[in-house]
Length: 213
Image (tube, rainbow, N blue to C red; front, side, top):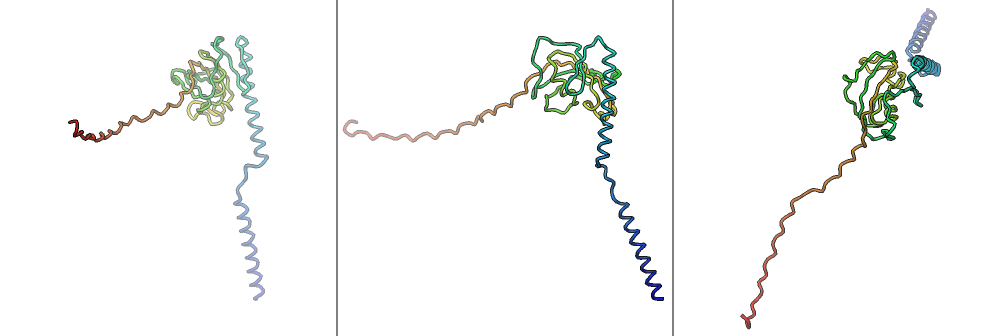
């Protein structure tokens, strides 16, 4: 009888132990930072970039009269208005004044120039679209350029949370109106404190010479 009780208790304890162990194993978090996951993610990004670039190249090929240039940053651009006289381009710290229009890759306007209004950009010191950061530095004053940006140097996966969607390639038309050097910090002027009044020195009376009054 005691033997049966001991056997039953041992069996119950074993079942509970196995159940707890299985429960603990089931609660382990699934790691998504494995090499396989990262490789699949990188492969998807490569395919996406290649697909967008193929579309852009087809657009360029369909417009043989327009001369497009390939940048080292992975986008293409063509001049509407070109300035062949000036040589200066915006550099870090300059303030660029420009107009901007944004279209989708089929040419449909997303943000017209009138809606965006005049744009001001502190070169390399302000967060704007990655493609524009580089593209503006290629321009001279009074030039108008059409940029073809793949999504990875535009607004990427998240879009702009308004009109630009996920992984959307863009055509950006930029007119650089002017650019000026960054304003130097103003020198501090010395304080103009009113000078304290100087106490007059006491007048020393000279003794009269009794011999010569």
